Image 1 (tube, one colour):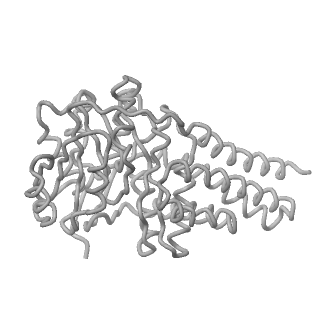
Image 2 (spheres, helix red, strand yellow):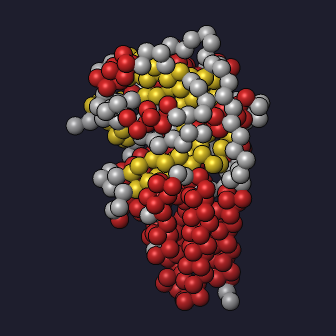
Amino acid sequence: MNFAFWLWMLLQGLSVAGVLNYWRHVPANRQEEAPEGVVLLLSVRDDWDGGAELIARLRAQTARFRLVIATSGDCAAAEALAAREREWVQLVRAGVAVDEGQKVHKLRAALRALRPEDRYLVFVDADIQPPARLVGRLLFPLVRGKADITTGYRLLLPEARVVAALVGAVEMQLATLPRAASATMPWGGAMALTREVAERLDLDAALAGRLSDDMTIGLAGWRAKLRLRPVRDLLVGSPLEARGALDFGVRQYRHIVTNSPGMWQIACAVVAAQALGWVWALVWGGLGAVAVGYGAAVGRMLLRRRIVAAVLEVEQVRAARRSLWWDVLAPFAVCWAHFGMQLAAACSSRIRWGGFDYRVKRGKVVRMERAR
């Protein structure tokens, strides 16, 4: 066997080992905390429909909190919810941004509306399906003094369409990467930190002019040498429609390349090794190389099936598993699609997000206008 074949075997073995590492670190004992002074920050668009399922899931949380909904000031559903649920819902009207991401603009307004008794800040997105343990699990490492910032990660629930499942397979590669405090970037869909950490980072000022909330907070946390801890059982279901799925994938990487080119380069190098390795295996490697690639794909699939079953609710598992078939039937296509999204992300500094077109330079918004 030649050197290229052994290198291919090593690369595929490492890919399986990475998913196995994630599986082995999914906690069986999922301890929670429910301290006083918890505030949950939720930014919503003007066309938000009230999120009946999301609100029901937030009501079912095992930890109590006060909900702050941040809007631009023209969301009828949020106004109605706040009027109906005055005891636990506070509405913040931020207006429309002129030089920063609209989501960041609303979150900054929510931060300025905090009350003296608010001690723990939990950030969530409006398009997630959070389990009842979400808030309590995010708070556990904070209350026990084991972390400064905690985070879950999205697990896409693609609709039954080929493209959506393919993007879900790409995101599944990211969701099941090994995670360590020294290499964790928080995800704004499920993230928590203490009020003390927010003040230490001067979060309002740190976010000013930025487009990405979680990238900004994560990079600020790294610079301040804070402890960023992943909560590995919090792979949070997030539905994905086929329409716009590819744009979603490119946008995620464009956030990275415009905030941290070095991080994007490392991610590209890792994915490129797999993508180009598959070209070699299919063209020159022969049946043995293809068999190694498919064997590793089956191994990853079996491990990811167990991860999905362990972290998601029963009704979410079927949707999440649609992505797994891609990594079994055409693992090379998943790698090529992943690499293609990374390259496409670097071709422009334009990000269309939440009804606005942004031009971004070094993570800061240099121009924005409503999308047409």
